Image (cartoon, rainbow, N blue to C red; front, side, top):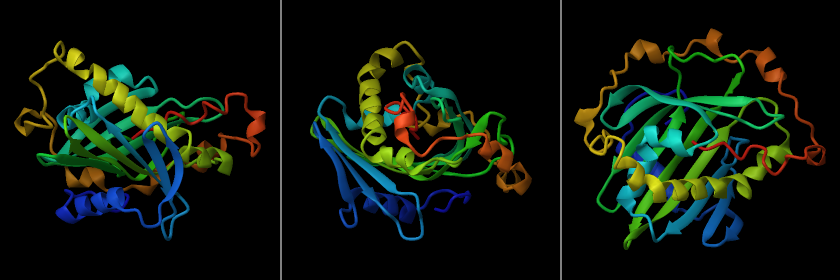
Length: 271
């Protein structure tokens, strides 16, 4: 699926994501510590690298991880970098459109995203992925730079009583970012994404027992109260795109030595 394309995901779309998650061709190993591996890949026709993180968790079941990755109410509790997160509408039982905004450390400006999320569940594995789309109810907000998810998501497989998690991400943060900041993703940011999700999963059952334990519309779609998408609401309007002046206000130098907080810059991007 292409950025801006709004339609229910098809079997071919999930198969494409599965192939990205499982393939080894063209991927370069960037990080390998404590059972977590990070790979990067340059895709033809794009300057934005694909990042892939592979990890295994013996203490989190596949079904538990499915709940954690879907539960937006719980994410508000564990994702300390999130500013706002909510679903806007649904295309059908397995596709919705939502909004997500994050705090970025100085000198970056905050980012936000509007994405279509698609998911497919089987007995022993599941896929959840998203890509950026437009929705008229969420124009670009003052103080944010609208990022673009080209393709981001999770492929999770059952492994005994635990699971393996493969996180694939190709995100354009927009703005004016130097190469040193963008390149940190492969060895600094990506592993932290999976670590955060794992930690959140360990606390989910206790939290969920006290917060609408029977409410899981990602398992029981009839529980969803989201309105259906009106096609005209997803038609792109160029006048609502980020202005050039918005982009120019973010100024980050080319030398990382100038930033004492360099180890923390951009550790918050997680879609």
